[in-house]
Image (tube, rainbow, N blue to C red; front, side):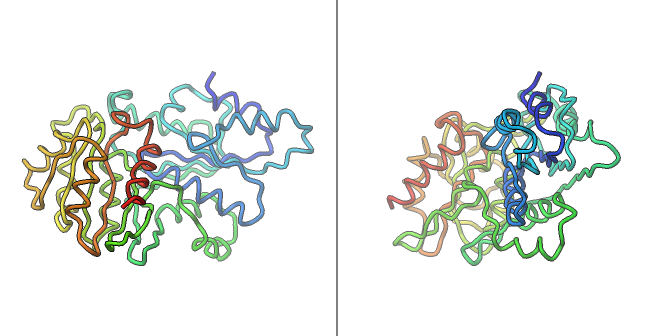
Length: 325
């Protein structure tokens, strides 16, 4: 029995489940959808693979008399790992698959297997439920020093379908993305903006971050533990050459730093590419290369486990470096 199976079986049947999965953006969509629902005064749980597990709130409801459980909606981030075990009782009222790009292939082996596991989210829905497949790129607006993920916000708005559209629109400016997603940390005394995109643990997420920095030269930090891309001759970092061309330079670091450096250099990267040993060393090089008005962006395109506990730990360490500049 999986954690989702147990939680959904115990959760009161009156609670509607809004489930979100995908390779990138699911935490932001879950966060935004939860914020929207709470804005309308709807008692909402936000969690799952993000933060608190669904079983925690299910157990809290289980201990209460049914009339005392105020929960109306559970907005749940669901990972492919969680969907590996069939969940008969996990029947979302709304299910969203945001996108599918190569990730966790060291576990799932093929994209077909990975996609099939993700799409199990729809397997126990009935004809009365809503399912959304929303494939596309994530768009950021950093020109004003603020960022709005309009793509994610739109999906979140759709996933709470049934609420007044104009009322939903009124919540957009109030949405706050979770940390380490194109998060502007500070603008230092040298006029350099520090951007923490540590959650970019795969190439597609880094690509989206780079697209959001158009018009602003950046020193881009790539590195960590590169993801496995089964059945492909390359590691995929050559896909970043085009969006990198207008930036200041690239600094690679971590256990896959050499691999990333060689891939970019051997495939025609037109800007300088410097190899550093670890994140601390990469930041040291970045400070030397960045000029007034530039950004220093950590958007690694890799997992963090070679040097850090998780992407949050990596992001916090980067923020400490930024704030000490």
